[in-house]
Image (cartoon, rainbow, N blue to C red; front, side, top):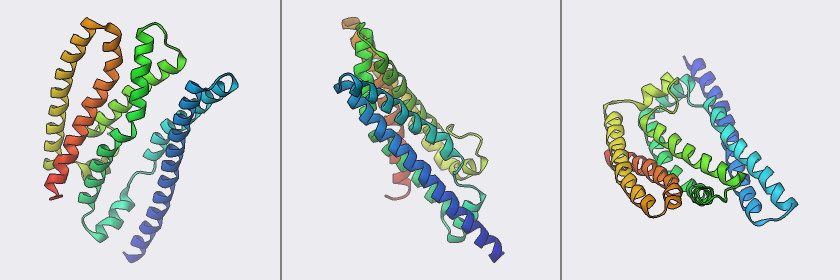
Length: 230
């Protein structure tokens, strides 16, 4: 039994190291993508072209890091090692709630650029970079909502057992109800905005999706924090 635990610990160390490498790849890719967008928007000639290439490469690396990270998520060895310490389920649930609360902060610049891109496209002045930004921002909001709903990794049964219990399911229902309320109020505002200036309504949609997903994620984090006595 002790030998199996030692083997599980070794596997877990390798998994954590690889996951950190993938996270570093995603972080570097996101940073390179943002720098590329800034360079493409402010540069001229070859500098602008280099910025576009850097933005595509960086954002591509960031997007690719998600499926790669899925290969190194906690597994049976993780559960075995952490169960030896105790309290693993609570730790996993807390880490997930915190990650959902932090994710909106890391996406603010992307949403800002998406809003500007939507305005330019609706005004007939959109370029390739604007279309790319408008497409990326909703993807972040969708991923965040999928995380709140627990649908971001449906094939991982081990994680599902760790993350789903009566309490977390009630958190999800409450958080998704908040999302529904926010999107209904927001759509009324966007509709009124569209009656005034249609391009403003188009530009506001990425922000509405972001606010909806963020409100849902923050509500989930608030409920988890309250339940843990934090």
